[in-house]
Length: 400
Image (cartoon, rainbow, N blue to C red; front, side):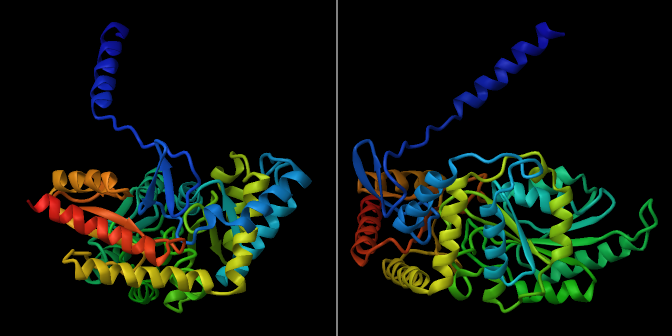
């Protein structure tokens, strides 16, 4: 058996190796510019929306915490729950306007825990077709067998799926309980920068007695008052059952969290395997995140700067004749269609000193390739102008 299996494995690995791409190696901080191969490139591809990756206050908070407490922690259920973890979770809950929050070492783990810990295989999930891969994996890991995918942001299709789910719900589970229905959506869709129609989703959830879960990885620190996220943006505090947030994008550190009512958080604290079986956030990470939440709680200066840059760049791309889709956020897709054209456009931009990633199949559907621009509050007006000028030069060069 091994004589047949091993060659098959190596053949499969060789096929994967042929498709391998090598990421560019950065030798600087994640600021407005990245140093790659000794040269600086305008950073149009990192989701550090607020410039916190190089924020002096966050760096100082991390340094002070290291001096006081050291580096590592441990398992939260043993010796790894530090006073800083509790402080961070309390501040996140207050910032989000929820009763409680629990942190994980990644938003990927938070998504997995949120679904796996709550649902059994007899419950029902209804998910937007364009949800992030971490949500798709979370549903798979949960073992839920009854699941639907509704057409992206199509509320008519969502309602049709809810009708079907409610019919399924009439058949009790083995323990006699009726199945739960959970609607899951991204808050901001990372490929197109559009928002989920959350008010309508909440309305339908109430109509059909379903729970709601929003993965707001790209909305935390970006949308809502002072960056409180997409739920705050729509004025729906208390109406969404589970909020997932990332601490590695706008917050520029690492980790993720679940924010919800206290009984639900207590359930995750006691049962979420991704929390129970993983090391907690490190001391410097946690201290830096506390400082980030404090900064966003103080004023809206950085949020205002970010959205000023978004408006400026969005207007600039349109004036240059680019199609930027239906973006409503600092994610601006410059739609190009053809995959080879998108790759060539990105490569040419790099030659012009701008690092902006091509997004192609399978990340998006075939024929929907684009170069994705991610805006940051760290950009000056001169940076924005330099980026727009580079896009114009590349557009003109490739049109010849």
